[in-house]
Length: 238
Image (cartoon, rainbow, N blue to C red):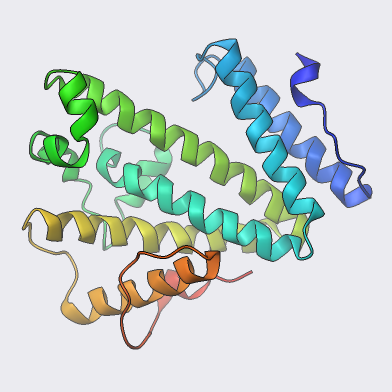
């Protein structure tokens, strides 16, 4: 088991603390059969652990570890929200997803429309499963679990890099609020469902998401014209 977590980094004291913390988190995830990766086969566990360990090393070896980690966190929470907004509801699922239902831009109701969404949003899974939504849901959950695990690892790294668990929590909370709202709005627009946001809120949200995605070097999110920002969405930079 220990071989799964062997680091190849020649590290300073801070690096060692980060690697030890991430290693411990991954070890606990593998050992817990109820965790997202605890029930996976050993080969898949090893691959996931190796990929997250390698990502950790690349953060620590970068010229600007805080910025590198922050960009990772943006990408990971984007992927987490893309699937999580479909899983979020107030009566089932993880506590973190239930919490997101308290955000003004997240309804916790999209899961009710999966019969409409699946043939378009998850065409390959829907076709392979012959329209079995249980298999589509399993794919959605697996994608969410992987993205969530990666974002939690990046949050843990960030706590050490900026020496503040509270600031990291606020930062990741603001990103989740923004990306969950963005993906809910995107899906509602795609399927002609009423928006939860007014036009100004939608414009501002799309601007902020576009700026964040640009910061990661990735393109493809909607651009807009002028940012505003209030509440949780202000605290998005390390």
